[in-house]
Length: 136
Image (cartoon, rainbow, N blue to C red; front, side, top):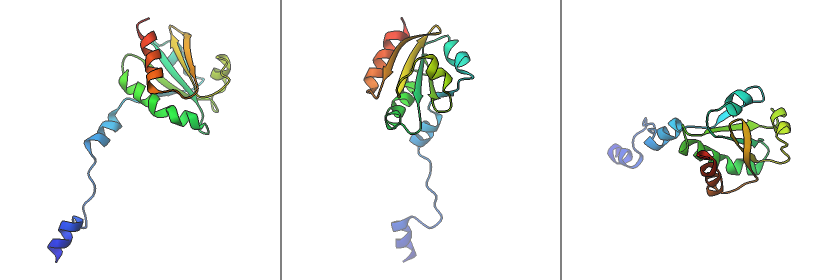
């Protein structure tokens, strides 16, 4: 019966192997987490379009768009700076940009805000804004 047991259950000491998709996820570009202290250096002085997701841990719509922001970081890797800023721990930047609600995603080019999206939107809405400002 040990042969049948091993066929049914695969043996007792086998550990699951990491799949290539799991490895790909680990190597996938991610948004940069910025703070009030490094916002100017990372975002405002960027030599390309920057997208900044202003969010908070307690904000459910922020969690809804988080995968979209991650997808944008992967899709536009090398062409766009994609960043996240926690508004609870970094109040100066939201005040500077007049943020009244979250999630708010700022689109910044050449050191100035050129556009924004407030609230949860689809991937297409965010990608359309990126495309609009990417080569503008």
